[in-house]
Length: 490
Ligand SMILES: [Ca+2]
Ligand SMILES: [Ca+2]
Ligand SMILES: [Ca+2]
Ligand SMILES: [Ca+2]
Image 1 (cartoon, helix red, strand yellow):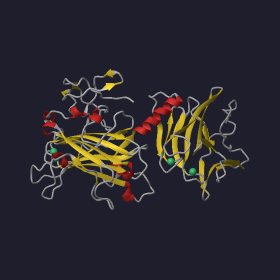
Image 2: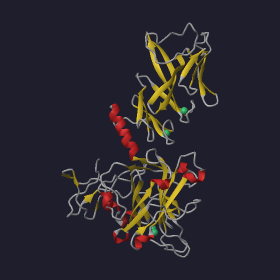
Image 3: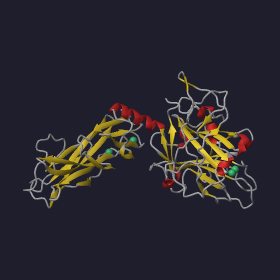
Image 4: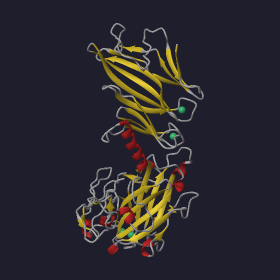
């Protein structure tokens, strides 16, 4: 637990730097000069009173002059957010921001115009822009929004009022396509009254309308009419999937009206370009629970936090229908997820020599169970008496509730640089409810038997060699008909 933005002494005005975080697209955040904030209350962290160096929510609203030279908006970029699972202060959806501001990460100001005309419908940061934070529990997602808006409006004369929207896309092939997109809308105009709002289904979703059960939304106005603070919760049950670990496609947007001219159109400020029908255009919400698991894997395997996962994939390889995280982390192939009876992560050390170079991680269902197997390809460079050979391999990993096993480990090519190569590529042969992983007798591409040498003669092997072009046998098969993995050479 690491509070990030605890604030100093209650009685004095505190100078706090606004965040200089960037979006994933690398765009700098405007308005990052230090400013005067309103007094904030003291917080004890352990026994130490810490002076803040990061943002507090109260300082998020900048002086109006910041909007004077707003550059013409460029193409919107999809942004990535993290929904934190590691925090001390419980969130109460009551319109009061103290439960957030004691521990918040710096976050970019969103000012990407995706609908409406620049200068006419949207004049800059003070017209409409926002900052967003997310926290997760096992039951709900909580969001906090600090928005600037020069004019908060109710629906009027057939025009909508100000609203905030959050969208999710569920990567679940079991669901009919229209049900994979979920939009939530929170009316902002109740901030003009008592601030009590609601989370509603966004318009245009078949079978879904009205208020979302067990959700909450509360608003509070910012001083000097500069905008609003919004917090809301959405129960995971309303999102309808077992979300909270794997990253999810996501977009948040502010739909702003000001009613200052008759010709005005709605201005939309969004975390992504957001084509509703194309989730590829959305951004990403990552979850703290995943990052906690990743940290515990690093600790268990003594892997430094500077080592980033490589060949990262999300695929259903074990447990329930949720996707697991599959990646290389240091020397290990790692699988992690929730909903797997037996473990939260499993690993196997597979990079055991310096020249081991991963080339591909793919997935296929090869055995009768519905989960995918992992196909991993790599190459190594080895020497015998200063003679070099480059070898290629494929390994098949099967993940069960007792962990990960290597179902196949097969040499697929050997190359002497400048001379030629011998290769036996993998073939997949479907056989109803299982698939044979087949490697036929290798063929030579310019490498003759007299030129070949056994570079691994002195080595203990945990793989199967290719059947060389001069071998009398014709193929190696790996398969699992439901009675465990076997292989045959014939
Ligand atoms: Ca506005
Ligand atoms: Ca407005
Ligand atoms: Ca799974
Ligand atoms: Ca399977």
